[in-house]
Length: 197
Image: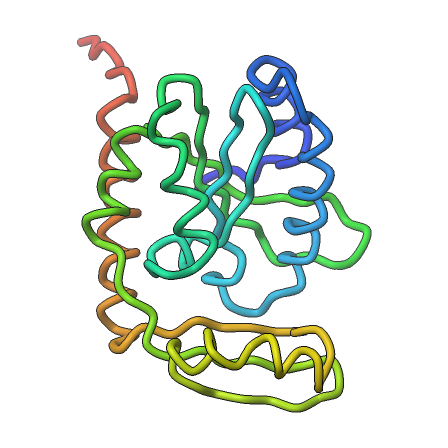
């Protein structure tokens, strides 16, 4: 069984050595990861995180693999700077408010990984939203783009949002394949123990 890591101090170490400007971005990431501890489903607790020379980003892995989302656009934007980016998959363990953020951290090769994202990401079919006043809507992505401004003016800020592909099973398969690549790389990197007789 893999040991859980205290995530925030680990990320602070990466930021200290790799992020020159906007180190304060990590505070926002910390809030995202703390909130994730309270989520029921692992998909809502699995993130891709990057440290760049100018800032950090923490984004839901699920949304990164959905083409029209801001998470996808943001994650794939920095390919020109790939050699300076340190990237990780973070799987937050369930927890309680105020507890340490524990979980698993898997290193990623950002340059290789974003090529897989670009190749395998699926289009968003529908969007589910719950607004500040409690109203909930499900609509096509095209309708969402046309109506979101008017809806937020009428109902207030979006409190919860979920992007959906046409086929949820297809997205699950894409994510499982991506995680299998990371697991395989981790296994091949372990040094072999010398056998003695």
